[in-house]
Length: 568
Image (cartoon, rainbow, N blue to C red):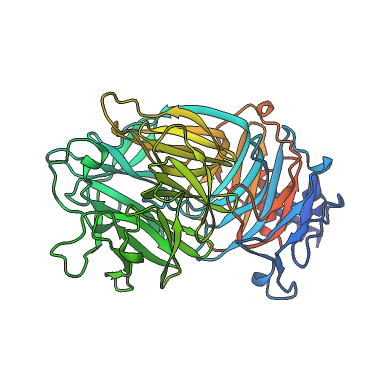
């Protein structure tokens, strides 16, 4: 028997399995350095021995005796979360630490996924978060879909750098999107004989051409759907940015799917009944309730749903108004409009008017959305203000961005709400109340009326922003963030977020998926008096299920991450 055991162990060792099995069986080893351990099978009790029991807010418990796939605490994405009061045991300082959890999400696209675990102070910009991010309504784009992130901050920022020009003659990048591990840009190229193109970011200031699907002058909208990249085309009226009109008069209004290289597959045309031709330009491409929707950038207003057969069918628009930026939030689709200063909400069948944003007559256009600390925010023209949605006909003014007139792309990046503007293409961050702090100006092109910080996306732990009229893209690091730039899979999956020395690592199902750039750990003292929260953070309330959440005061090894992913 002893000889047989030795042979079996030798076989495991040869195949590299011995460390994983040892850790899986060594509960004492995996318990080392635990700050808290919450099974979340029937309550929020901490079983680490440190007494960090959670306070329950709207979380529901599934039957622990049920099928393994049905277990775990359910979070509704609206109000539910668990709170663990700040404690000396949970003071992270600048030391190593790790977060581990089993995470369940479904294929729903009627809400953003939200934060898994966080301990973050927005006033001091100190703390950490682990989250699943979907950024919709970033002007006309869905900038990513179900992106796993792990970030820390101690009020640090790298400053902005030039990330190049996606097109040789591009006026701007209408769209930025992270898809299948790469960052893509959709350009506007308005010159004679030119057309809108898609480019893929390589490194530094280098972009790789992915072709031009249409002869129109712009790629006006981008979104991921079903694991594929889709783009909408348009004839952008350049005079709307107070520049010389484009000689390219080809209409857009077509949807294409990326097929790799420079290849594109046409996936339909957006055409309004009674109109002699297709629409000029696509706006607001988005996934909602498992279906694709798109709008018309210019009048007449149009809103379209892609059918199961692939056709794009016109459906009702609210009060005859155009719907432009589209954001998915708390079970609904929210839309801005260039026809008045209102926001509209769609439930999959009908629209409702959520009222005028700002004082009567103050705003004629609503531009962009962001979800910040579980609340929906919208940018406006011409007041240059941002408003927070409270309820129908109830919008709270959260301040003007300097002396700017228009708030364009907005995005929550590593805990901070960041926005771009017109006419100076400036970047601001929200400091709470009605205070916005100017960070920089990204486009300083002389002798033009309007400069725009147009749209944003997150990629490889950085924030990217496109600008008009210089056609360039800029990027920056805020704190330290690592992002797995793939679509997080549905069902149960194990996540481990590890701060080890001067690097952040993300593991999914025991495999290392992404790492941050290196940093000096001494610069990131993360101790805060804010509570530890499970299921909510600086982005949104989590929608899905969680179980076996652990927080360690040390860095888990790769073998330990694999062991946790193979247990339970």
